[in-house]
Figure 1 (cartoon, rainbow, N blue to C red):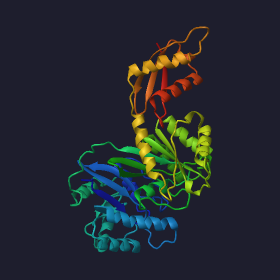
Figure 2 (cartoon, rainbow, N blue to C red):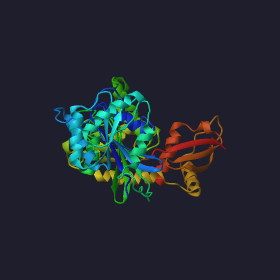
Figure 3 (cartoon, helix red, strand yellow):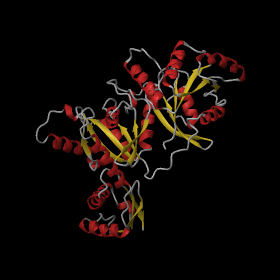
Figure 4 (cartoon, rainbow, N blue to C red):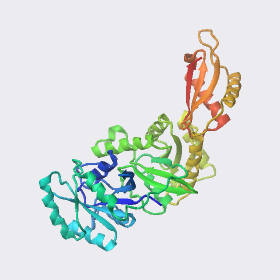
Amino acid sequence: MLRPLVAIIGRPNVGKSTLFNRIIGSRDAIVHDRPGVTRDLKYAETDWAGKDFTLMDTGGYLPGSEDKIERAVFGQVQDAIHQADLVVFLLDAQTGPTGLDEEIAQLLKRSGCEVLVTINKVDKESDEVNCAEFYRLGLGKPVSVSAMHSRKVGDFLDAVISCPSISKPSAPPKDKPLISLAVVGRPNVGKSSFINALFGEEKLIVTDVPGTTRDSIDTVFKYHGQEFLLIDTAGLRKKAKVRDALEYYSTVRSLRSIQRCDVTIVILDATAGLESQDMRILQEAINLNKGIILAVNKWDLIQKETNTAKEYEDEVKDNLKSANFLPILFISALTKQRIFKVIDIAKSVNEERGKTIKTAALNKFLIEATTRYAPPSMNHREVKIKYCTQVKSSPPVFSFFVNEPKAIKANYRSYLENQLRQKFGFFGVPLSLLFRKK
C-alpha cells in the first residue's frame, strides 16, 4: 500500500509553502512574500508519531486567471484534490474568509474528499477568536496553527494523522531501492516536457515561458519493475544573470538536486548546440561524481542527412574533451522519440556507477597499462606504480600506490583513466583516481 497523500491547498499567500517546510523540517519549498511563488506540485515524504505519509505543496488557487502559468496552476490544484487522501485547506486568520475561500470550499464539497480546515497565522492565543468565523465555510471544525512561528504545529499534525483516510497502514519497504534522476539544463530546453512525456500527462507545468519551474519537483516513476525518482529542476543560469532573489534560490535548488541524485540527465537544445552554460552544468555533475547522460532534445526540429547524428555527436564529444565518456542520446519530448531509451541508459549508468572491480583484475590491468606506457621519471628516478585497488563504489574511487605520487601528472592520470574505461567500462560515470605514497 502506498503512503497516504496529504495535499495543502488554498488561495495565494496564505502560507502553504511555509507550512510545508515546517512539517518536513527543512526549507525545501521556496518561500517568498510574493503571491504565486509555488507553481508546480511538490512532494515530500515525512512522518509524525510513527505514521508515514506523503505531503504535497500546491500553487495558489486562482480560477479564471488569463495568465498562462496561473491557469496551469489552477488545473494542477484541481488534480491534487482528486489525488489526495486528505486535503489540508489552509486559510488566513488575519484576513478572515474571502470570496475565493468560499469558492474553494464549494469545490471541496463537490469533490467529496476528506478535508481538514486549517487556519494559519494564528500567532498568539488572542488570535484564536478569529477562527470562529471559518465555521461558515461548512467544512467542519477548523484547527489553528502558526507555520511561521511553529505554534501548535504538533497539534495540527496530530489532527492530520487522526483523520480516517490517513490512519491506514503505511506502505511496506521497497524491494528495489529508488534510482534518483536529476533532470537539469538551461532554461526552456524542455526538462518538464521530457518528464511529462514519460508520464503521458500534465504532472508538471509545461509552458513556453522560460523559467516556469522554480522548485525542484520530485516524482516517482515506475518502469519495467524499477522505481525511479525524477527530479525536475529550475533551469540553471549564469550567476551574472541571477538578479532576482527567487531565481537565486532556484539555482541553488538545482545544484542541490544534482547533489542528491544518482544520475544526472542533462537536457540540451538540439537547435542551440552545446553552449558554455551546458558545460558548467556538466562540470557540476562531474565534480560531484554523478552518473551523467546527455539528452539532446528537439531533435525533431533538425534537418537531417545520412550522417547528421554522427557528425553532431562527434562535435559534442570534441567540445567535451576529457568528458567524452558520456552517453549521448537524440530525443524529442514532443514526439516522445527515444525518451524511454534515456531511462534504460540511466539504469545502466547507475549500475556502472555501483560496479566493483576485484583487486586481482585491477593489478593485472595495471601491469598491462604501465608496460604499454610507463609513468614518466622524476628527477632521473624511475616512477613505479606498485599496486591498485578500488576503495569505493557509487561513485567509483581507485587508489594507486606509487613511490613518487607527485610525479603522476594530469596527462598520465588521463591515460590511466582511459585505459580503465577501455578495460572495465564505466560509461557515463566520472572516475576518481587517487595516488598515494607506497
